[in-house]
Length: 207
Ligand SMILES: CC(C)(COP(=O)(O)OP(=O)(O)OC[C@H]1O[C@@H](n2cnc3c(N)ncnc32)[C@H](O)[C@@H]1OP(=O)(O)O)[C@@H](O)C(=O)NCCC(=O)NCCS
Image (tube, rainbow, N blue to C red; front, side):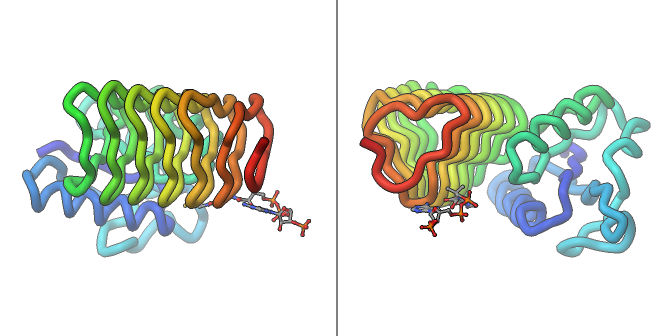
């Protein structure tokens, strides 16, 4: 059993704890020792039935033994906190729900998340710190960059490239072979019919 802390004692953090429980129910992997959070009101007590352990910096003594999952939805902040965890000598761990369906050749970077009912098809790849929420479809050969986030119900079609840190809102999608640029936002319910530039924020159908 691998010792694990979840960073971020919010709603996503509690959801990540639930994923850990679901993973362990399928095949025991993790001992969830608690949550790290530096918010003044989340440094002691409990969250979701697990202890609050204080700021991540306090885990330095556990370098080399404890893994961490960063349950912070903001892509920039998640990137920064994952760098902090690494600098402390902690290893980012991915949480892949047993109810996700992932083709055998898919590559998934460390510290990523794949939720319930999501499908990641052949030849696809997920970078590090990628969030694939529940009921997301990642088409064949799609590449999802580091720290990108696919919100619930997103459909990324085959061969698309989603840039580092990009956010695809709930029920957003792309037609095949399109690129969503680095740190771009595709709004909830919006479908990218053409490429989205780096850093752009687009909503509704883009044509
Ligand atoms: C695109 C988005 C980032 C814009 O956020 P924002 O900059 O705060 O924009 P605002 O809420 O001020 O809205 C600005 C205008 O765009 C419209 N708009 C916002 N998001 C839209 C969307 N997804 N589709 C269509 N129109 C949208 C608003 O109605 C508003 O129009 P108005 O000026 O005519 O009133 C945000 O609306 C969004 O879609 N985020 C996705 C979040 C998500 O899915 N999270 C799930 C987490 S699991």
